[in-house]
Image (tube, rainbow, N blue to C red; front, side, top):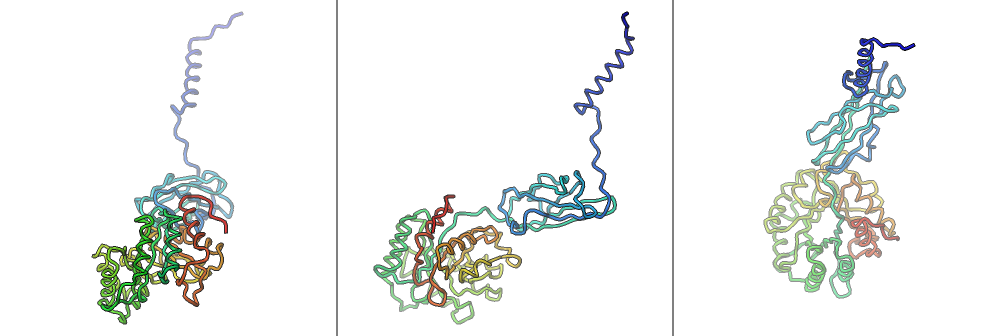
Length: 395
């Protein structure tokens, strides 16, 4: 026997099929409602990046992780977490994200150097919780360079020849040598050191632009023992005795307090007016204003053991506004090649943000800058390998 389907049944069946199809492609369904807030006390805390990951490069993704617990247990999957940053240059890929196994994840990147605060918040049906992390954004780091305090004789067979031969072996490593005449105090009666003149000339000829020389000038911490007039007279005499050979001046015995800042700002303006650069050596982190009174600041001068504890945070985070090549370190008493490489590694960390390095095995109780380290070529090779993303030379 044949069963005839009523035409209305055909229509109803067709509508059911169409409805199901539309539901499958999202044609008629409403958006899924957000998950209901879980019950109980809620806790929110940043679990990433780690504390030592507080410094990041501009235009580089930063992985953010937020741990959420409700009533002491991992929050249910889908618990919503809202993220926000306190400046417009910081962009979050997911301002609202959801937990999986108690953790919510997002990414952020910032186009400008400086400090940025990131907030995370979540809500239960009875409580709310939040946390804040401060991140520091620095300019993308440049290649490491060497800053060599060449406070040694330039006579035939001296360390200046070793300095120049090393530059010849590694011409792509930028080296700034600090030439020291008369301990940085020149007078109208001072004469040219012909050995130093010749040594500087040979050194700078290796690969013009990559080997620079700055002249050491004593400033007596801006205390008045040497007046601005005295220091400017030394600067002028250096230029007269070594014409066309100097790229700038190294202001030794630099103060670090704001009360001496005007003294060094005056010198900075004077030297820049001659088209030359300024390296200042307070030997520690100075007042933030000194960033505008020098092109490079030596923010550490001391022994290798102490350098392992170097940390601009929390008092000197202004260094993250600067290129890494605006900070230098001079480390002595690094007895072994491996210790030297550890110091270079520390300088290169984002948290240290230091781009000009020098390490020696000579000890601080004597004259640590009176010669080159026994591992001089290894130091050059380490910097060169780092800059070219190769394995560091074995010690």
